[in-house]
Image (tube, rainbow, N blue to C red):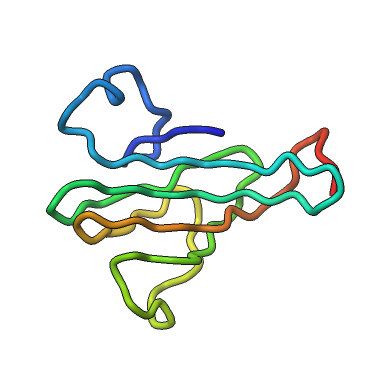
Length: 110
């Protein structure tokens, strides 16, 4: 698992300790034995204002596919595919869930 700030940079100690930093990105990968490898990115925004978020660049991730956006009842008309480094506007106090797609890291099975 990896943690990123709203700018797509690895979370620093200052980011973790700052009361002003209320947006974080969590990239998690499965550890499959028999099932296919998969990875998700969860973006959590905890402020009452919109925020611009830059999706993180991560080894093996070529694209993020939006699966859920708590700021929209219907995501069928929301841009679904994004690249690392893309900037998105997030609604206040909302979450985004993406499937992180790309090459499978060395040493995984699936």
